Amino acid sequence: MRPRRLLAILASLAALALIAVGLTQLPGSSTGGRGQPPLTAAQQRALLVGSPPALAALHRKGGRLLSGGSASLHAELAALRGYPVVINKWASWCVPCRAEFGAFARVAAEYGRRVAFLGLDSGDSSRADALRFLRSHPVSYPSYYDASGALGLQTTDSSFTPVTVFIPVHGPPFIYQGQLPSTAKLEEEIKRYALDG
Image (cartoon, rainbow, N blue to C red):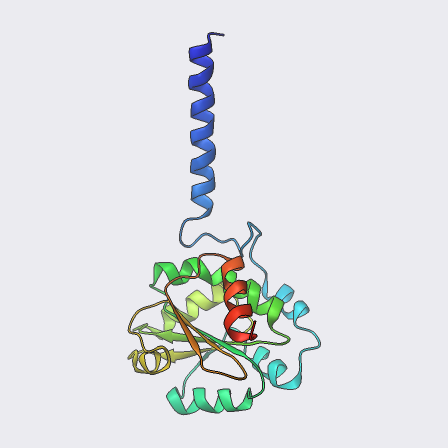
């Protein structure tokens, strides 16, 4: 085979490999981070066995869409006092939110025996769309439904999605604007801002 033709074939194969890798990184891809498949609800529950009572109570509401607005969210946060909290503001129509959801599902299951996770479905005009999304993307924590976006704005100081708030046991919250691009990045931010280093 001629060297020029061989180079052309190798270049084509390399391009195909890059396209394949890129497709796995598209928003809405179903990986749970680290190139791993997403965790099922049963796998998430298995990882959370032995959680302290306050966190176990939170896990029992996993995947649910709660109402009650600010009063309910603040009551939940009061029940979680003594634990670091991660609040992820998302919406079912938000492409970056969908892209990071697998990472949140995996990390919430892996860290959920010492860190509380909550979702805030902010700006979804259809509760049915949000519930459909949660059924197809199981997570071990509940989300609060915020159709108007007011609770999301109050909680994250931002009208955009996604936004994640890291609340340590001691010290001020840290607000991360935008998509957390990987499981590793989410873990890094949790260690830095929720677990006090």
